[in-house]
Length: 155
Figure: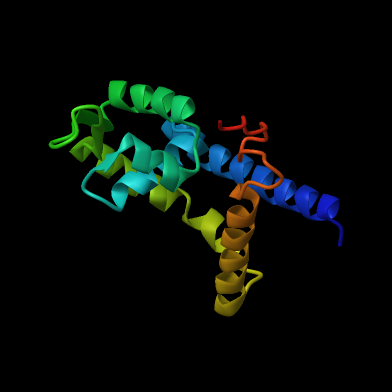
């Protein structure tokens, strides 16, 4: 398999999952990306926006826009960080926790279908390989930064 074939297969799997998740959650007024944010927040009492960027593999500006929408809907709250005046702590509200549990239940069939063709070992292997791929793709090569721009020389 070539790198091109791998890239196309990953894109196909991601887009299919994204579309199916969006369809499963659209009646609840939440996008697949917003669900990912709610899911990350459900695993912790509060996270900084930077931690959310890392956990959700989101762009900072995109994440901020999602947080504004989720906050307006009363699903999350953002407060000043207790020790870092520049950071914001983000957490689910009680309404957000209830909404997340409902969304989780509405997406159960999709998760079951996604896991159906795999054994537990297959899933563990696939997850490990995807993490390895993400780490390899995030490493700079040939003087480029992870976003593809050339590093400027340091004098």
